[in-house]
Length: 122
Image 1 (cartoon, one colour):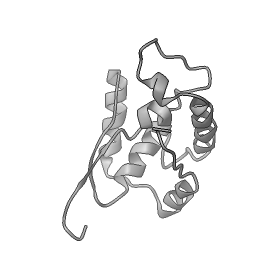
Image 2 (spheres, one colour):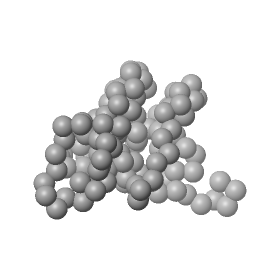
Image 3 (cartoon, helix red, strand yellow):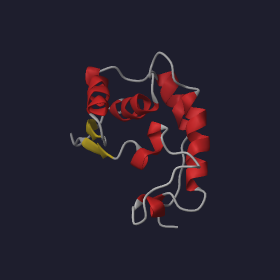
Image 4 (cartoon, helix red, strand yellow):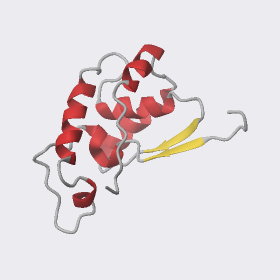
């Protein structure tokens, strides 16, 4: 904020990971770039982590998608978020998160425990 520069968050759902729709059984069509992104045991890792995040859902966020977007929008430097969407329902749900409600400090601290540093290219 020192230089008055905003941040645009791109891919806040981590290519679908943070929607809860990626499971160990998820299969992508041949040639789909997600086969590389979610290679080896990454779908299993994603699923295990998402299961833990789902336990945090409640008053502050009712869905994983809402939690991910509110997390991004709770940072003061974030100007906007560019979430992916495939259905009109997704658009409506994503837009509803722009109501100005931020996650509590308690929730933000809890989410820090779920930080996952990984390298897509390995």
